[in-house]
Amino acid sequence: MSDCAFNVEFAFWLAKQNRGNTAFLIGLRTDESINRFRAITGSKHPFKGQRYSTRLAENLYNFYPLYDWSTQDIWVANAKFDWEYNPIYDLFYKAGLEIDEMRVASAFNDCAKATLYLYRVLDPDNWGKMLLRVNGVDFTAKYGHTHAMAWRSISLPKGHTWESYLGFLLNTLPEKTAGHFKKKFETSLKFWKHRGGALGQETIEDLRKAGIEFANKGKVSKQSPKEVLVFEKYPDDAPIKDFKNVPSYKRMCICILKNDYNCKYMGFSPTKEVQLAKQEALEKYKNL
Image 1: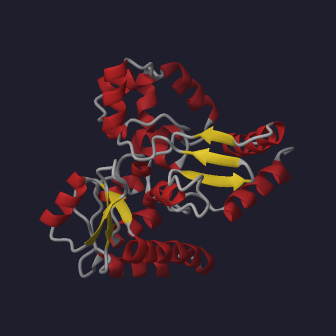
Image 2: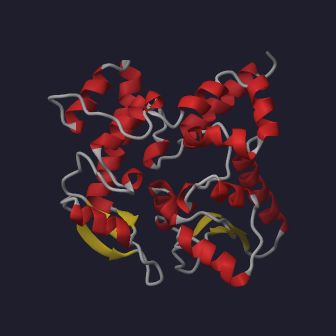
């Protein structure tokens, strides 16, 4: 059972033991990804109108008290209140990472490929174990943050826009795979054209300077500095610092080139259908 599945099962088990309401506190933040913004603020059944809550079952709720905190807010609070934190972040700092680049998570998910090389410096003992146990880990560490795996800058072929190049890439894929990507991309198009996503003030200013048109629907909340933007014309490219969190056809191309089947680069999480298929495969082959 995965840690996520365990958390859900434990929540339901604990709720059955309690006679009153049961609340689970979760540290998700809306600026981590568009999918998390949607998950937190899109609840149809919040607790007493609190938008940072969502009902899982009768008398069982998830609460996200840090939902509108930025990464900067967290480190200001750490310094101001002298909170304890994982010392791995100090090593990240010494390795030259900015606070938005620091991530403690599985070494082998899609988001971690680009920083796998850091294990050689930060955790050499476990790095040695990885080399012995995981096929391809050395290759990924060397090239996971380079052009070889569609990381950093990618050149647009002559005669193409990113939108037309996306069409070309989709035509190179098997029909089923292309259909899967198209469904994800259509969801993104609808989301950014109609509902909109939360972006910070610096990103909004960068978008203005880049000449990218958008409509501003106002702040996410009174406390949050972020504002919800919609894009009637989906951007072809977004040549700004916060590129990853802004919609563009180039971002879609990167997902295909990175073989990012679940489009995590665009902020998507695996669907229940994908998670179920994965679980069934693990169960089927666990004794091999």
